[in-house]
Image 1 (cartoon, each protein chain N blue to C red):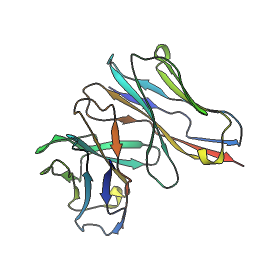
Image 2: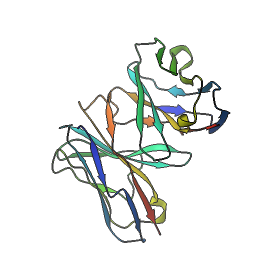
Image 3: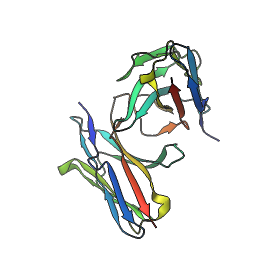
Length: 114
Length: 114
């Protein structure tokens, strides 16, 4: 069975603080993909990153960084120097090779206060 | 521009009145899928289609129907909507089928069933 857990339902921080969103996944497959999506208040899903199970390199994109650790089945997302525009719901998702769907976590609502 | 379109974007209806949410993609993708998003549950797959005339149930198919008569279109049909189908619905497409490395999501359809 595949499962994604985002234990943090809501996070609220003050602008410029760093914030980490946790994602823990479960799968028995050795080949899989992990994703992060952002859902701003307007409702659309914005793709942020995709990682395959064979690439454990951490990734940085501007203020965003991702820490993939297979040993702990985690794929955490950090925003450095957060901004009000980062306020959104963030989803972590998993696709195991051959499974015809993305399995999403419950989402984390992030609020950045000015 | 590569995109997935959904119509309508917003819909208020009453219990039992049949409705169809259309989904269309212009990327010649074989794979299409429908998800619903509910608070605290993330997104869950309703139905998916591997190609024309090939559809299968996802995790929450009850109360929904789909069809795939053309490659570009994948409508979601609610024959007799009920209030528990009030949700935010997303259509998605990707290629190739069997690997959801890159999935394109539509803008979402907000449905309220009274």
